[in-house]
Length: 161
Image 1 (cartoon, rainbow, N blue to C red):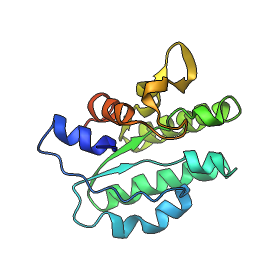
Image 2: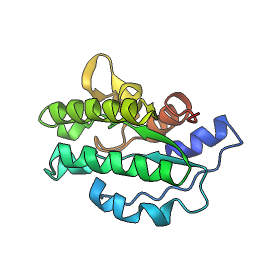
Image 3: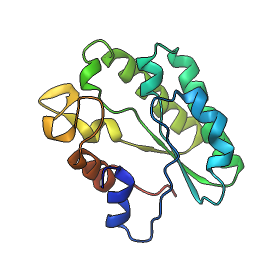
Image 4: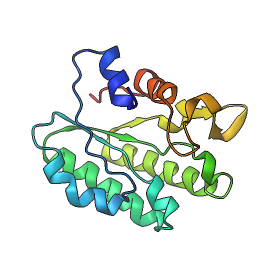
């Protein structure tokens, strides 16, 4: 119950997810595993970028990696969605400009590649504390809590056309 996919599948029982994420990986590392990860899938959800920011990886390179994964997914004939980067309480305020910039690049990629953006950032951002999550939406300032994942799965996930 500590993943957004669980809550999205509960909201729509037709959904079945396979999460291939690995803790701490940057977009370049995710991209290397993409082909093996999509076998048997109908939809690809590309989510990455916060570890690039945390590890000081160039944002333009991260965006290019995300775009390449989106393109690879469409080459496989998959419907593709691209999640934007969540707020990061423990990185705030220093990481906030990079998160906003990368999310702008993600929005541009989605427009150029005609894919859906999943609004993970706005769904988790506390309107009273911009750039951060509500305390109940994070377990440690880095990751979502069960309630935070629930919110993402039910309010931010939609199947791409």
